[in-house]
Image (tube, rainbow over all chains, first blue to last red; front, side):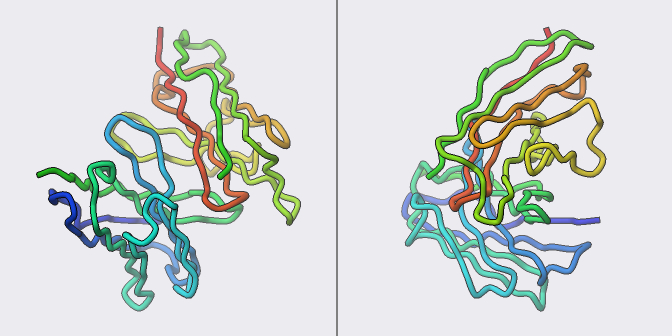
Length: 118
Length: 112
């Protein structure tokens, strides 16, 4: 069974930074591109970033480009999102998502809450 | 970016009755490989989303057959043949044809 567990969320001041982690299990992690999707409180889903299966290619939404960095460690089955220069509008639950066959968001973690407040 | 527009945004339904949600994209979702990467997600309160339908009309593993998807090009529909209590929550359409992958605003389904 696919299992994705995010960690590293918390309260941070505007301008601060955090590193979110996602531990993957139940599948061959190195075979899959991985994504981060976020959801502000009471709002809809927003695409954040993707990293290719070997980590060689990344993409960022315009709203986070230059402030967030996605990375992965296939030897440890871990996905990361370094979030920096945080703004109040970055406050959200951040989900780690596997993309399966057919370009589908087929497996989601439970999410990590990032709260940006002074 | 491709904009995904869902209607309605709220749908009160009676148990056992059908429900339908529409999703329109700002441009064709037909990929250069010939596939159309339009999916539907369901999110219950306090839970992460889960995949229901992919590539317009394919039900994901474990999804009941009362859920069906249809459409082509820029217009798509999710139908629930007979709504059950567990179907409440928010439904999102999403496209994976072009980066950034984008989502509709969500349609809240609740029981009358």
